[in-house]
Length: 104
Image 1 (spheres, rainbow, N blue to C red):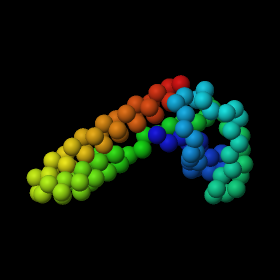
Image 2 (image 1 turned 90 degrees about the vertical axis):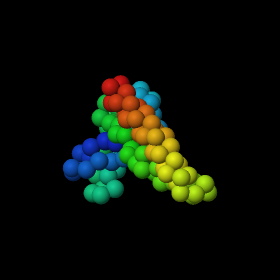
Image 3 (image 1 turned 30 degrees about the horizontal axis):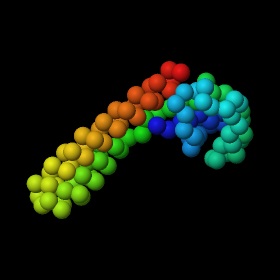
Image 4 (image 1 turned 45 degrees about the horizontal axis):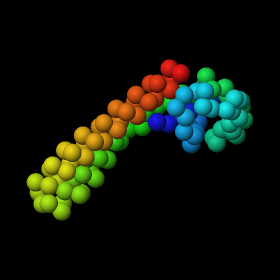
């Protein structure tokens, strides 16, 4: 899950490296300087949004397939399927965490 605010100086998002489960976990106010136009602004936790990160299913399938090489062609297929399933579960959990954050 990635946290962001919509830049006040333009139509783009500013992403944070912070980890928070709810908006109550964030400082208030949050001073952010836009890396594109240099404008600085104060944001409040209710202006912060979360989005799920994609790529878990594909990444899991690729990793599983690579690990499956050790077991031959059948291992590649089974590893890819298992890795995709595990990665898909991680994506669903990330989407649920983002939904919960945005509802906080």
